Length: 354
Image (cartoon, rainbow, N blue to C red; front, side, top):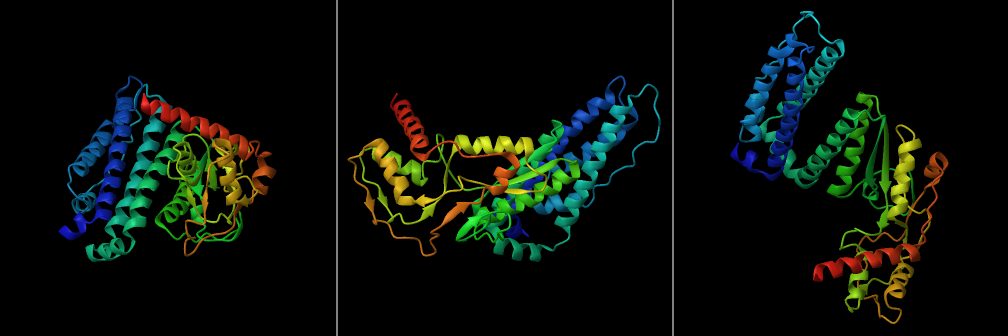
């Protein structure tokens, strides 16, 4: 049992269910306040207090095994059928629906967790530790986002997936290309897309999923090809690169943001859209554009880095659905976007010195 509870995936699982209960508890504290309102459904106060007591029991557990043992004992009392005098029907409906939703989702979670033996969990966690850890983290964040959108009264929700959902594929990427992710990140993104689709369906919200290719621009990560090359050239270093024969699709971040905005306005429920420029160039040309924008006389060590054993040599987004449904067209040439990106990185370096 200790081996199970001390395994990293089990700790992440415990962290996930703890956050789930903490978030639910905050919502139920608000429901209790509604019940205590002058026009609130005070006949439900005892039910909500009982639910909060069960949540406190779960939050007092110290590991996932204790959590599952405690969860198995949680019971939900039937809501009072008293009519109540002067009760606002909308408040009553809100409390009843919120409580039913939590009860049903908790039971599903409990049944899933309590349906396997410790030995079965150990086998599954040891085989899928890294993907599961990433899946739990991403799933929690994405489902929280769907819940927040629903609470805000949103009619639709857009999720940002990744090209990593496809695994290795040579050709234009669209929704019809089979998704066979080969790493934990891609697996987690693919599952997040499916889970949020189900959640949005339950809420009656429009669900749009995107698979984003290579985006560049200000605030990009320092380890990306674009940012690391810019940083090396600004520092007077010679970047080491592959021969740069890969055909690649780069899209400026402003264009990517505009694509997401347009999908928010007119993306179709249940569809998957690839976001990119829809055009490719050899990676070498992108790198040469970066060099010319920083220092045309700088040297690039093309061929200093070997290709990866399973290097993809063609990556391009099929944006025909995106264009047909939203009218999207990329508007920023790489040479223009890279100038803004360089200026951003220069300003960051100045700020670091100050």
